[in-house]
Image 1 (cartoon, chains in turn yellow, purple):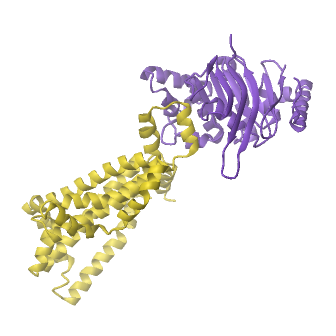
Image 2: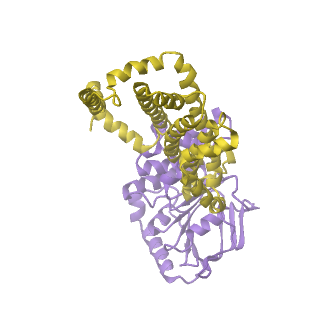
Length: 260
Length: 258
């Protein structure tokens, strides 16, 4: 399969949807639904002006930092706890409860606890932590008995066991958790900025809404979509690299390569 | 000089909610330096329990295990195991070469490399060093596991039904590979199997176990010489005779003076 057909396959439906959007909004002529041709120039202006550094960089920076902290914390704790049936027996119900709280609802709590100016980062960390943690626990506890015996027979050091066996064995689940956490981090970023912030995409979005500047509001919504797509694609690429050893992944690669 | 392995009065009982289960009981035998001992017993007779007790993975409820004169408490440093389930025993995220090198982390890099290359050459897998285990056939994967054990240079190599999960043709190849490699490297091997023919074909001696709880029924010498050949050896009178004796002992289950 050549590059052109692959590109078409990937984007055809998307492009048709954008065209339909343009057509329908133009026919409707409603001020609430500006066409994409009006939204796109505003987006370009947002991305290539001071707004990028004043609002997008701080907000997205907080999101990525919060997600990274949640990832490190979740993987480290998950590997540690996942190998102890007793720890899981004690902590499992608590974790399941914490995971069940819708992350945006944590915003009011953190506003009260740490104040409106500093609450974005802790809210993102707390919201993004649970999927990584629980998935890592699941992956770490699933290391099969033969590998445990093999590690013991060859007297692997604790570091070799943890980093060389448990972590790679858990990695497919870890990545599944990281993907869920990433989308949660984006949601919490925007919601925390809607509620109270001096900068960020959510802050500008709610401002545009209050001034009835609907094209700008729409531009921020589309920008959020673009950012979410971008980060998810980057994470998928990282996952493909890190899990290249997996039979399943290379099978996919073969299927893609041969067009089968 | 003490034997390589000395097992004395070994017994193990698993405690469970619905009563205790005695897997092995009053088992005594030795493995001499340089010997290949095959342990044969009916399925579920406690062979795995025996192997786990010898390798220090479980602490037996009774009796002692000594490796060249030292009592086994915990996994000994100079012991390696080849498991039946090669696909789970190997690490799928490491290349074949790195799988073999993985237990050798304490050695300098160059020596690790050299040992792995040597072991892979011994099992005829030099060309597959950069592949991942799952890209190889079952028989080749088990050869990787054997290479990993050889590179570790154990005083005693334990093998738990190592050829039970490969097809008959591959099985013959691997049996001959094992005979050649242990002759070249003078490895002491204890191999557990449920296959009577395999135990006679491979062993210098065959230890016959009874049904659960496993006790030693008899130990037979296998005077087939060092050079064995799949078709001729298996057709020889001595082989056929020995196979019949082992089969008879497995059925009789009564302790016999060997």
